[in-house]
Length: 223
Image 1 (cartoon, one colour):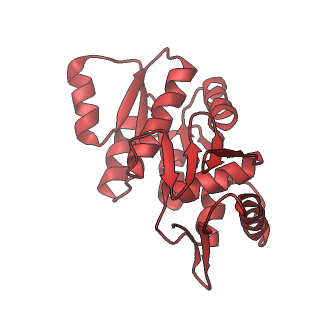
Image 2 (cartoon, one colour):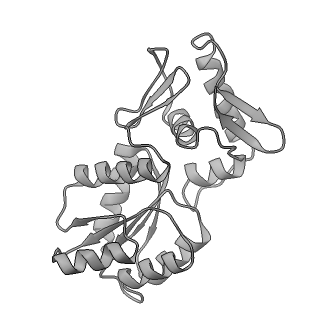
């Protein structure tokens, strides 16, 4: 999963980004003003955007309106110091998916972020199930027919993304885009390495393979 944090208070932005990386295992990009945030949100694909309202250059409310006007459907979690009912209604009508009022608890922010991503991919439950495999997005535990499978942090991120997109073909470039941040040097064969390792660890614990390769297209997680 990949998130964009648009927040002009650098310390707060870095704290939120650190929590998303450490507590949720997400790749995170940062933008410190509305103009950069709008550009990054338009040029990249994000599973979640965390948006402050009081931003320099372009304020957060205008960023939100422009994103929705331009057909960007990533879930948007708004950070706001205003909690008046009329203002919240205005934000929701403009396309915000949820909000937290400053000051906020980082644990609550992470929980809301995970819930938005699940809903954005059509899942209401924190446990994603495909065939005999279960992916717990809270504990980051993966099991096959009830048996826990030990995965590295990146292997977990690969299988979680595929589980969110279960049944859909996911290209290698899409996986790279959602697993790494804006500045990472993307190596061409790293996805193949993770997929091979996942298959090896699941082999023998499931009656049929779940990760399928479609030559020239990518990967699909399905029974």
